[in-house]
Length: 290
View (cartoon, one colour):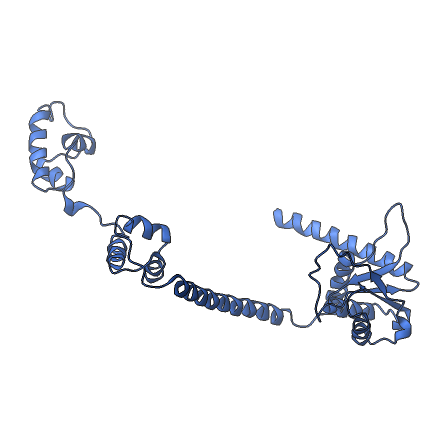
């Protein structure tokens, strides 16, 4: 707002009045209304250096939390207990109470460790329950697969885990290797979809020589529901005594190799289908970006 010349010429007199009102506990709005000053810049200059009265200060949102944290600390609570009680960060708790004396330890280190371990185990149980709920919801969301969906899944599965030709080594063999029985089941279902007769399949077990070879051979034969005549001689991997193996125990059954006899035409179809998926994915990505 523009003011007439000379209206605020007596600046010092106005400042004396403004300062007196400020020290009397008036807010800027009250000083403005009383002195009839509607220029905010001039109003701020008149009270420059004078702190606002306490009642005009907006309370900070965490003041109550800070006061409560200090109260709990004086009662001997640890940072972790205060954090859990108030739902704030540990760094905030530390900032608020670091000037207060540290509470005396009321538990032995062993007792404190046992309590911490119990709390951690409870937290792990909650995490595991949440993990299982998420997995189960995702499993149910899949539902049934159409023939096209199973076909596309199988192509991706093979291209990730199956043998592939190289420009310098054209063999066009269809060979799949995996240790996961569920992956093997999906792969066999895919071959069935493609009309590959089970008589064209040959299996080979690959396993460390110091594992239970006979048990692994029985396991894979039952899984693929094939006669032992469909199995080649098991490939044994020499054990290096300097290596500490982690794939041990009853669940270790090595890998199963599945080869399709006379599979050149099938290999070409797999490779072509894979690059069809790549092209379609690229086009979908471009469409999503535009």
